[in-house]
Image 1 (cartoon, one colour):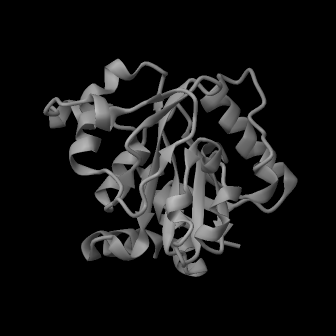
Image 2 (image 1 turned 45 degrees about the vertical axis):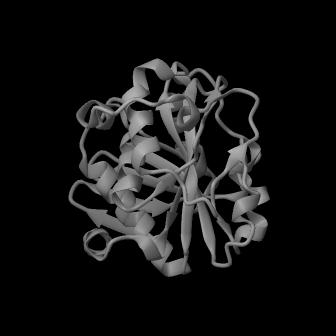
Image 3 (image 1 turned 120 degrees about the horizontal axis):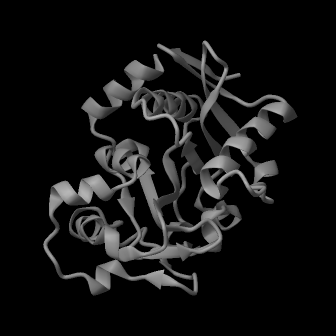
Amino acid sequence: MLTLRRGRYAARLADTPADVDRALALRSRCFRGGSGDDRDAFDDLCQHMLVEETRSGRDVCTFRLMPLNGGAEIGRSYSAQYYELSALHDFAGPMVEMGRFCIDPDVTDPDILRVAWGAMTSYVDDQGVEMLFGCSSFKGTAATQYMDAFALLKERHLAPKRWLPRVKAPNVFRFAQKLGRKPDVRRAMLGMPPLLRTYLMMGGWVSDHAVVDRDLGTLHVFTGLEIGAIPPARKRLLRAVAG
């Protein structure tokens, strides 16, 4: 079983139903304010990662992983509910969808994100994954507060045309069509979710539109990362954490 210990935190794959329940409890706090069950049909198809504070045993981060043999299986993914992903059907290598990523809102230590990505790096290397993808979420459903972030995504980080997801969800914000502004980069990065910032630093790319998800109260963009395209210096840093 994958386990990674760094400083105050340890990451591991859940291996019991009780572990999965812990992941779901943290997700409920993060996505539903603790008042609703965040379980869905995809949970039984996924592996679940937990990051915990080693001294207290407190769960501080979780995400789930759905491995796919290649693009021909992408219709099974959670993301395929919201994005038309036929452009990715021809991706030949192993893929994994990372979903429901969340960090305890009461904890702000940046080392948590580092350990989570270290664990993901170990998983990707162990499984020979060639593409990592998922939905990266902005809090709230009003796009107006994120205009600089969306303008920056349009300017620098749109998916290559060969992989570009098309619109499927009924309620979307087509930022690549609608925004002509020059982004304020500082304001854009302040509004960018930490998970998405990390994807982008590694060479990740996004859909040209955001889905309005009223169930979770978020806006999200499809995000893809080809492992072979990660800059060598960034790979070395990730593998140093994965150790």
